[in-house]
Length: 584
Ligand SMILES: Nc1ncnc2c1ncn2[C@@H]1O[C@H](COP(=O)(O)OP(=O)(O)OP(=O)(O)O)[C@@H](O)[C@H]1O
Ligand SMILES: [Mg+2]
Image (cartoon, rainbow, N blue to C red; front, side, top):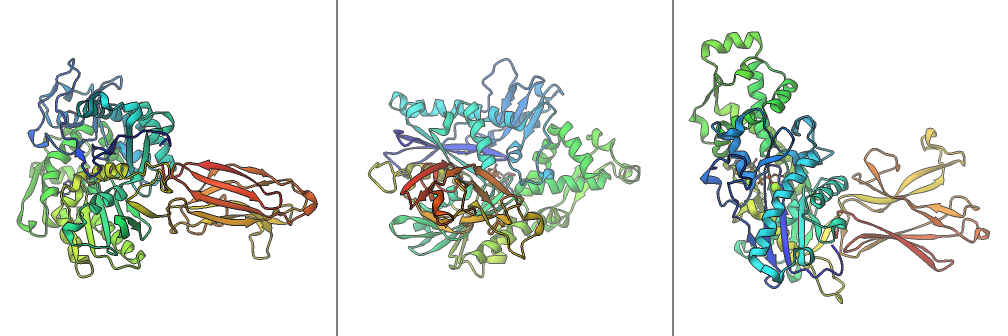
């Protein structure tokens, strides 16, 4: 975000794996956030027949993150209308000239297991899909802002966009998402009018506004479990003085969102047909629409209502009409299924098995998060679409009810992320004189997601690995300036003093690296990324090795700054980079 920007309106964008939405607010009324709900089911392009859509989804907080493309990869439907095409076999879009894509957000992540990512049609990149989807959102955002504030708000000048991403996602995901948002015309080049926060942090800011409903007071600690379609993200926050929030443990997440239960359902179908998982993934790519139909119309109603008392609910589906799956079935399974008329029955235990990996992963995450915080957790808030699962709520209460007093899903749990992102943007200090200028007035501390440091050359020790010994009898190591897990305040500085390894050197390499490790040892370790190459001058050769350099890292509001000070010459120089910890 630009330091000179005159922000009047904030748009919080929740670009979700399965559903997306946005909320708006004005800085003059910072608590008054509106969730956009006027999603139309009719696609604006008149040259394609648009299905009427399902009334049940009209006026919802979010729309499906789904696109329908024609053969030239032009978008012909998006959102509700795109999802409805999947269901409406009478629609002109059900021919094979069109392809439906979904879950493409997961492709942004390096760490997402391949099996969880969608296989997109050949010739379509996930970046194009994201850009195309954001382009459609942009039109809605623009129309809505114009309708609310007219000429009093210029989108280019007065609007701040706050985007959210899962906690575990790295700078690369953020950079790609930024490029897509710029290409979509949603934000300006250089992100002048945009910033990112993590999804559970946005949800925490939303829940923070509701604390009085739960009688939580200063000093209380609460946990957010954001159960989405793709990921489940968890954070723990403490209510500080002056209505501020502190982060008390490292936020964490996993790819165990609600669609992982859908994937388990597909795995069971594959198993019953004797089709391998890899082949099923291929088939899912080719027949995306039909798989979506199977999941949305058959499995989701079962999934949504499933609970400990579903034992006697009979779930049957005939696979007779699924010729493309029947054709792939193994001979043995065919012989077994043909007399049964291809009727599949899913028992209570079958469904429970589909939920189990996801539920276990969520329980593990919560357990880890409780362990990571030294404070007692007074409340746990489940938000996101998956939080509506009665089964998930039951299992969480069974497991943690004895140690956490309040376990609840607050009002509007699905809109928690977009509303929280908007509230966060509205809480940014705009007084240039304030120390907090550009920082949120609500979020006071964050826990670092990465370790940051530089490369140091030090004398080789006898226990060091011999293959790392340089010609100068030294070794190059990762020296940590700020460690993952450290709690950071706005503008907080971390520093270290370094000396030249060679008495005659006139330059010193102080590249900046980041790593997800708590204690990265070498700068070429797996997972270490180079953020900024940097070589500084080292004058006064006559002083030999006695030439200290004070290197400091400051988490600022718009960027992270690294400063190198030479106390001998009293000179300093600095570089900056954008990171996900504070600021943009
Ligand atoms: N009652 C329910 N039981 C289980 N899952 C549910 C229920 N209601 C909604 N869901 C699931 O919640 C998901 C949508 O939630 P949400 O909008 O929070 O996800 P998202 O933001 O798209 O995903 P992510 O945050 O992972 O990117 C869908 O996968 C949907 O199937
Ligand atoms: Mg989400």
